[in-house]
Image 1 (cartoon, one colour):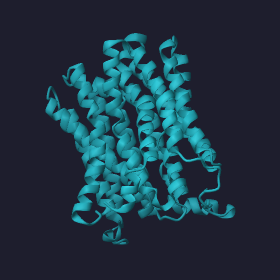
Image 2 (cartoon, one colour):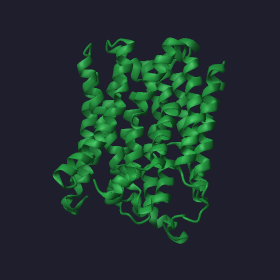
Image 3 (cartoon, one colour):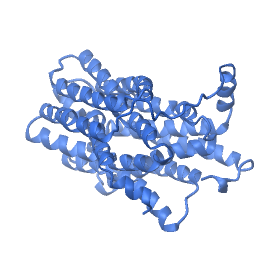
Image 4 (tube, one colour):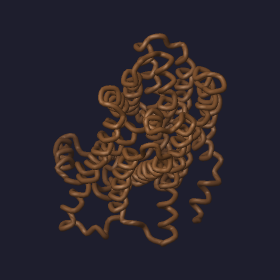
Length: 413
């Protein structure tokens, strides 16, 4: 372990941010799929109607994230993260009082604002401002610990709902966000009033903007990466948003479904840690393009395993391992592969453009998933996610193979 890694993992501030981010993901995102079946029984709304709320939250999160970036650039990242997570906590405490579907949608739109203020994107932007070229290790640390948020959420939510009620579980999560995550963010994020702002690079001069964008979207790698990222987002969130109904449709008991779903977080972390440990053991970095293709292939296999997992908890467990490892690895290598294939110059702008499909995939996946399951059933939903993953794998692999004659793959790192 080098000195920089040791310094990062012994930092009380980074531990505070990591725990705060874990709570934020658990309370603002994973609480939705964990509560979906209970809401269906309580409100008597369909899965598709309920799923639209998460879609609205993610769309609002993507849009409000632009404003969050401007606030961070002005040096108010700490305040943004704290206010965002408090806003989300207050909204969670209001959910049990909702009476109409319209009010439910409005409340989750507000939660979307909270997401855009305190989840990964603003958090990583703040860490990049604070650590500059040494931000990789802090980002890895936060993403590794926050990978356990799904496990924490599903287990705690299920336990509280079983002993008390689902409403009480929302009060608890609201309390955790307001009185634990918020102080952790305040402590963990340094005060910044712009004196440490990163030098902003303009992606292009005003008169060359259209040329710059035109050159970018004319590159095969741009479309290959965009489609692959969108496929990952669609596949993963379509499955996660319906994870408990999917498992129960395959013969798992409600308790088994929760326990198996809870393993998704450790599998994501395991995929990230496993990749780093294997590289360290072999004392070399894997070809980043090969890692991405491998992740795509595992994602395809995961949906296939889920489809054939009738009454087999073992096969369901294999699905969780494959799904978690694939999604964990791709999120770790995503910024690296964008910089490798499309260049480090104007990286922020390029990454934002390439990531549009990923964000849209996250946003529309819950609604699409709910509609497919309501109208055609859960087996069709699984088949759809399989085809989406296969499309991402085939398109990206084709782009890579087509470009082998131009670029030496062994030079990609």
